Length: 207
Image (cartoon, rainbow, N blue to C red; front, side, top):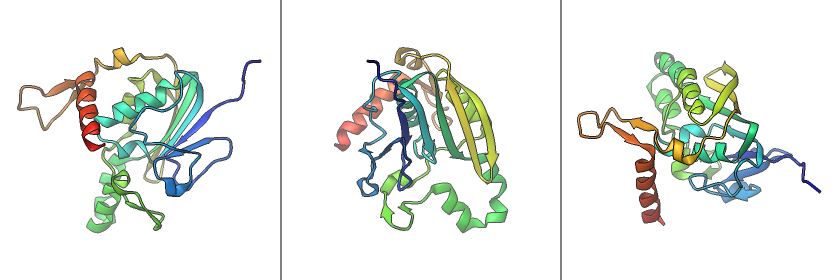
């Protein structure tokens, strides 16, 4: 008999564990359903997952690594499946600089490594990229997703996007990632395939 039970992944759950979801986090102190480093492939087959929830997570990956991890989130989604994201609204935060004051502004921008004032999560707590509504929308569309609901509340962006088509890894490998810092050199833009190779080398050196 075909298994019709839906699979819903709650990525980077921290201490917020949800009933009916597979709660996944790399920090074992949170006692998630699955301890897993999200910078590595998710242990689920292609197009087998109904929903993905990632609150305050995507901004913790740099402008290159975010392509690697987000591909995994979308890869496992069924056509018609949805991913829900919550990220800081970086554009709005910049407008609040003078209201925040320097110390609070810096604290907010760079993130928090002592989660809930209880568990030190190291570099996972640092913010490594910023999004506006426009840049987040453009980003998810590269992966065959279409935003269906986007709202801004406080200093956050909430976006739900639906998977319209399955974009292959080979297709995504052709994406060119521009670097302002490298604009004066020979390679101001790098294909994702090249970036992934360099990330893999880096990860192997850290093991």
